[in-house]
Amino acid sequence: MMAVTNGVIHASSREPLFSFGVIADVQYADIPDGRSFLGVPRYYRHSISVLQRAVSRWNKQHNIKFSINFGDIIDGYCPKDKSLWAVQKVLDEFEKFDGPTYHMFGNHCLYNLPRSKLVSLLKMPANSDRAYYDFSPCPEYRFVVLDAYDLSAVGWSHDHPVTADAMKLLDEKNPNTDKNSPDGLVGVDRRFVMFNGAVGKEQLSWLNNVLRDASAHQQNVIMFSHLPMDPGSASPAALMWNYDEVMAIVWQYNCVKACFAGHDHKGGHSVDSHGIHHRTLEAALECPPGTSAFGHIEVYPDKLLLVGSDKMADTEMRFKP
Ligand SMILES: Nc1ccn([C@@H]2O[C@H](COP(=O)(O)OP(=O)(O)OC[C@H](O)CO)[C@@H](O)[C@H]2O)c(=O)n1
Image (tube, rainbow, N blue to C red; front, side, top):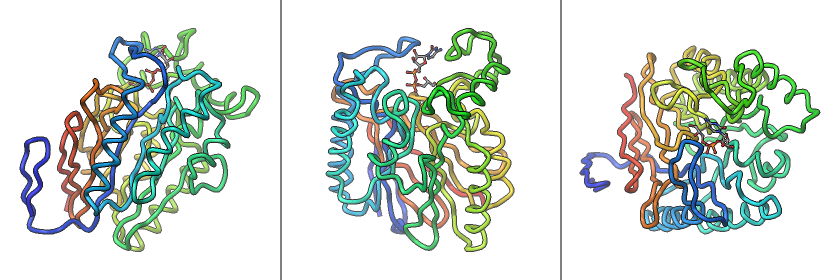
């Protein structure tokens, strides 16, 4: 079988077990183009065209089992009286995909709408307004979606105990008055900013149980999180606050083969000390008109192959034997 992607020709003697579609940081808003805090251009209206192209491509492929949206479905600059309308407009595009789409929270989702509203709008298979869950489309594979803003200073009401815990942590770790600023923080400590968050204690325990069960069933596990979890795959300021605690659990087992994330719009790829691939996906929001960033991932027994559109780089991820 031959696949031509981004000008690279991949030859594989086997068919994939299945494939799934990926897109990150659509951050749609019906507002003029702008820039990030650091000056990178953002195309708020065009990002939905990127999604439209993604869905059209996935449907033409005929073998995409599900799609996964890595969060930040709309942007924080979306006028708040239009948040619901904007989320629905993006969801209407995902609805055109011939399969289920799984969503996760990003910080920009939570700037716009409360957790409970998002869990139902995004039809998350979660038990509460904590948005973590797992699913298994075939016996050999298990997918885990993390709620990276479980412990966070955004998304919970001002008087919620989680907000107090998150602010306490930020006060301890980040001396800046503006807690969104990593100024003066060094290395991976730059992650202690308000636009990031952490996996809470209950979720860590749930993750441990899922990984134990997956190991017992000899399943390969792929993890999805809005926030990256390996310093090699993203800027320090984009990392999950407690990526180290999550990875300490992951490393107790041999089942996790790859972790995918969004949030750090330029994208990245690393392989950690335990041979696990970490792939941060390039953002749809930062695609100038006419360009795209989406892809699909071919799943094999011994590797994943990310087949990207133009701004999303192809990546082969072979599993450590
Ligand atoms: N140095 C910074 C960076 C950001 N801010 C403010 O924080 C809010 C969120 O930033 P934004 O860049 O929009 O967040 P994204 O989730 O799109 O991107 C993630 C990061 O780029 C990770 O690399 C926003 O209000 C910014 O103005 C800040 O004050 N100082």
